[in-house]
Image 1 (tube, rainbow, N blue to C red):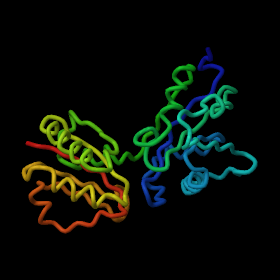
Image 2 (spheres, one colour):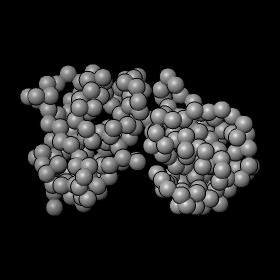
Image 3 (cartoon, rainbow, N blue to C red):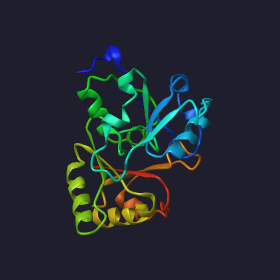
Length: 238
């Protein structure tokens, strides 16, 4: 058993959600990250670009260790990824967008850290799920994030109907990949009842941000283009 006294910490570092806009990252995060030299990331190239965008000055070739998560592995080699943490070095976990471990890989690293008594430190930053929820006007006391729902029918329409049946008391939140968003929108309109409320939160924190809550009936009369945009969908019923 390792103790907190002789190991580093896992620092959960928020990232951008699209545009490289350093203003959405709190100064506390930037200050802490600037002193770090160890990172676990999804993609080394985009992680380096993000770090430079928030003012990181260290030399990536000589001063910094960046380890990539294995996207093809059933389970990450956590022991290897955290090798330097066991030597007392703090390690930052960076997602491709927003906060790590929410609709993104990384939770396996955090779970392993808890098992090995490694301290986990979450930092404040943008979360598309929470930003969508608080701007929807829906129930923020009880909500369920369903992640990515099935791609093909009849499984997709069945899942949408199931979420609609639950959304009277619990806000249902879900998402899709950008190139399938328009199909998702069309399927929601085809599947849900006219009086069900739908919020679409699109391109959150970006210059093209779009957030709107309407009934399904009203959405059917609205011309909206969601293809290749980052969207969060929310369902609710009065």
